[in-house]
View (spheres, helix red, strand yellow):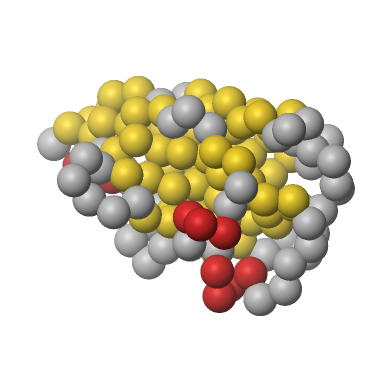
Amino acid sequence: QVQLVESGGGSVQAGGSLRLSCAASGYTYSSYCMGWFRQVPGKEREGVAAICAWGGSTYYADSVKDRFTISLDNAKNTLYLQMDSLKPEDTAMYYCAAREGFSSNVGSWWARGREYVYWGQGTQVTVSS
């Protein structure tokens, strides 16, 4: 059973930065994909960014491209999300998600929450203007 534990959320002023971490444990396979999602009460969950343990490709929502950077430390099984130039509209609960196994065409499905099997408990990010 894969377990995901997020950390690093908090409150920051617009223009500031935060770094989220997601520590994973219990992987059976060395091939897996991980993603960050966010959700605001009353709105649909949004895929923010994703990365897989092979290839090095990264995927971003247009709303965060050039401001957020996703990275994966395979040795530590830890996922990161560096968030710079934060905006009030980035305020949300941020969730880490994972799925095991090799997958093709990641670009076509990475932002769909139903593609992921394991989820963390979430960490709140609040950006004030």
